[in-house]
Image 1: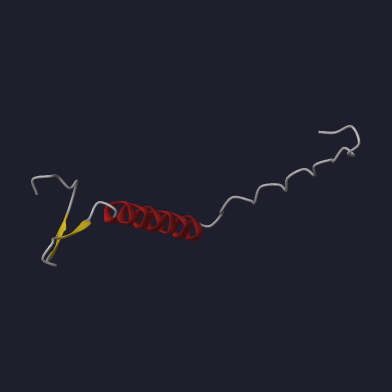
Image 2: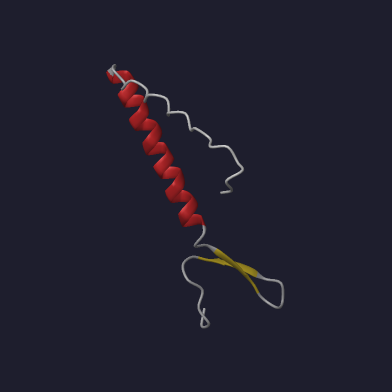
Length: 70
């Protein structure tokens, strides 16, 4: 930083929101977090599938790591 620039004061962060008080809110939050975890796992599993196209144009879908033999 240069000595010519003014010092900037950073405002304090806002206070955290109050915790969920009703059991319905806790159940809903748990369901949403479980759903987000499932979506994340599905996204990761989809990356393992590879479409292999041969020289003749045929296509086959393989799961897992592609190898030279398969």
